[in-house]
Length: 168
Image (cartoon, rainbow, N blue to C red; front, top):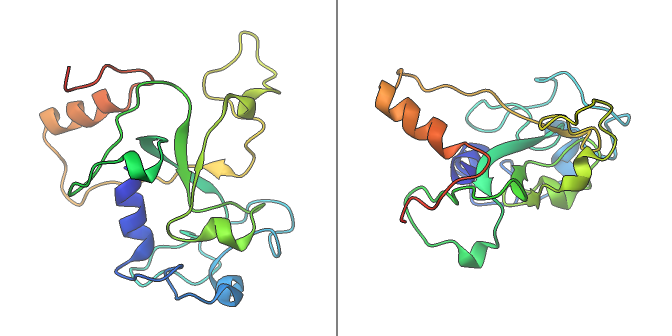
């Protein structure tokens, strides 16, 4: 979820970036517009955050599970999830190799858009191919202990492109 991503990115910090508030230190931690050579880079070449996670700032923006909605409309909870009900917009976090420092802050977020697929060369058009979102990717994560089949099914069901509100 978006909340889980930010928790991992911040790694217990409360600053703009996991390493502090000084954007001048980004060179040590992130690939972004100023240093990426206009492309993504191999993971792990920069310093990790305090929890040992690499490339949480920059390199590629990372997909999360949530529907994009303004923060002020999200109710507080332990682990908020804005259940996706439409294909767009969804949330990407972390900023990419083509972003400026403000988009790499721990709290920064972007909304996906249908325009990210304008140059899809496939016929019929792919639901996955985002040719105009070159700096967007995803992070593979797994729990330390394998969840039950029921817990897996619950997460899987929440990840469907269009869903009904679970409260209905």
